[in-house]
Image (cartoon, rainbow, N blue to C red; front, side, top):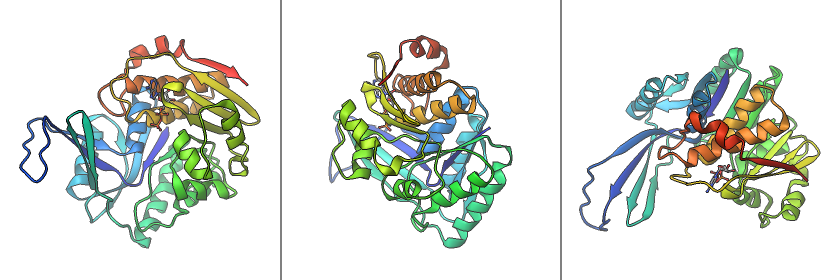
Length: 310
Ligand code: ADP
C-alpha cells in the first residue's frame, strides 16, 4: 500500500463569476468544492491507477470533516490526525478568463500535535511499501519535519518520495537520510539552487550535478508540456511527450508523483517508471477535475512517451 501524506489539506472552492466586480456584491450559482491539497491529488490518482492507497495528514473542524467525507466517497482509506482547529479553505475565483486565488494559511500546529502526528505516521507505516509527502508544512512545525518523517521511514526500510519546495525541501536534501525521489519543476529547482535553470539539457545537467542531489535515486524535473529531465543514479534521461489537448493542468505534478509512486512500488524498469509518471501527468491535464485521470486512456498515451538516455 502507498501512504500519501498531506500535512495542510484544504477544501478547494471554485467560484465561476462572469464579470467580477470589486467592492460590490458578486453572486455565484455554480459552486464546486473538492478535497484539495497536493497529497490528496496523489492519493486519488494512485487509487485510479488501481493501487491501494491510504491518505494521511492533519485535519480539523467541519472543513476537515468534509475532506474526510469526500475521501470516503471516493473510497480512499484515510487516517488523519484530528486537531481542534479548522482545516483551511482555498478559494479560486474564475473570472474574465482569469483566476484570482484566496488561500488561507491553515491552522498553526503545536509541538505536541507535531509529535502526535509523527507517532501516528509511524503506526501507519506497518502496512506500507512506499510513502509520498507532498506540499507545504503547516505553520508551527519545524522546517526539518519532513526530515524527521524520513528518519522514521528509513528505520523501517520504506522509501519516500518528497514533492515539496523551498526550505522544507532543502532540509530534506541536506540530511543523511535521503528520499528515493523528488520531483521539482524548473521554477522550484531554480528557487532551490538560487540560479535560473533553463529547459535545456546543459543547464539541467549542470543543475543536477549540485551536491544537494547526491544520493537521491531519482531526481525528476518536470517541465509541463516539454515532458521531463531525469537524473537516475549516474544516468540522465530526457523524456518527451506528445502534444495533447489540455483541459486543466492544475495537479499534473501531483499526478506525476502518483505515477512515479505506483511504478516504483511495482518495481518496474527505468523506462516504465518514467513513462508511467509522464502518462499520469498528461492524463491529469486532459480532465477538468484536479487529481483525476481516465485509466482507459493510459496505454494509448504511455506508448507515445519517448525516453532517451543522454
Ligand atoms: P507541476 O504541476 O509540478 O508544475 P508540470 O507542470 O511540470 O508539474 O507537469 C507535470 C507533468 O504533467 C509533465 O511532466 C507532463 O507529463 C504533464 N503535463 C503538464 N502540463 C502539460 C501540458 N501542457 N501538456 C502535456 N503534458 C503536460
